[in-house]
Amino acid sequence: MRMRPAVLAAVVVSCAFAQGRQDHWVATWTTPQPLFRNPVAGGGRGPANPSQAINARGFHDQTVRMIVHTSIGGSKLRIKLASPFGSTPVKIGTAHVALRSKESEIVAASDRPLSFNGKPGCTLGPGMVILSDPVNLTAPGQGDLAVSLYLPGETGPPASHNGLHTAYVSKEGDVTGAASIPDATPASSYYWLSAVDVLADSKAAVIVTLGDSITEGARSTPDTDRMWPAVLASRLAGNKKTAEIAVANMGIGGNRVLRDGAGASALARLDRDVISQSGVKWLMLLEGINDIGREVATPAEATTAEELIAAYRQIIERAHTHGIKVIGCTLTPYGGAGYQRDTGEAVRSAVNEFIRTGRAFDAVVDFEAATRDPQNPKKLRAEFDHGDHLHPNDAGYQAMADAVDLGIFTGKRAGK
Figure (cartoon, rainbow, N blue to C red):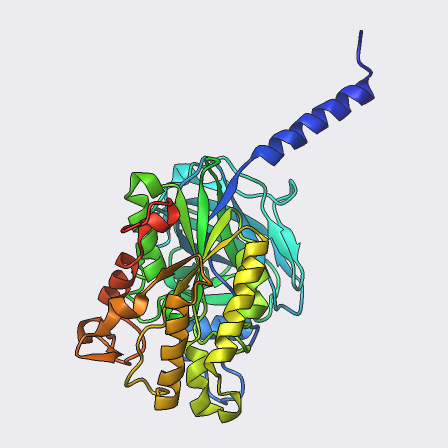
């Protein structure tokens, strides 16, 4: 019996759709976006660095090439663009992805143009998220990709997040497919790029690390991937049992749990920055120190341990609703930091006690124990202190990553 063309077409579409549903996408890299703002507004002085200048004026007829360090690899990839706090539409003229060689240089044979619903560009509206079409490029685990966007029109201040990898901005024109960008202006931000997903094995999954500047990796050495989430990703990749587990860093400097600041609060951004990530299975929560320290600048916003614990419970419940396990991370010492006070230390101590013993989290990582000074537990160990008594240095971030029991992610924890 011959099948009618319309029926045959329906079967083909149905089969294609069914196959698409079987694809397993996992975020190999992510970055969050803070609240939309002009970083040099109100001062009357010029911007201090190229990133601030770009953040103030935006792009026009320029290409930006951004460097992404993957956590796991995959046989195909796609990028995610987002403008959560934008006020005007932004036109993406063309976009390319390639393996990175060095600085702005790519491996030429790996260059791939990206498309969006079959077209070479797209318009990213306010609040919008757009996925590119999948592209056939084998992404290496623990390797660098270069994602290039051409912005043909006036963008205005861009959606961006300070990064710890140098980005390269062309003087003019579409050079998304160029082998390198000579005379590029270096910048330290990611623009509109929020994630790179890879097509991975069905067992692959991602850990999202939600936090503030300590998770972001502030004070770590730029262009070296020494943030604790990146070091954790390297550890996972080096262990056969965890090699298919990615890490998505969603730290924002100055972020708080309860109230907006440099970024939307953890409670406000949970759905966008955690639950929506492709392949998310675990959430590591390290946040609250900025809520505690806020009492110094704004006494009316002083935070109690009870308020932070209640917020943690909300995050846990919301994550569990989506099948995501939540790992509580103790707040690291901050004795000597600019906003440290005895009242805040009492809150931090009570919060950490809850994290350790409250039995609310699916697992616990004791970052405080890993970084505190044995002689003065309220302070970071001197060899882990970058100098502001709040942020760890590279060695401190290494100690934090080393404190994570990889058995949490395989069901075989040490001592269990």
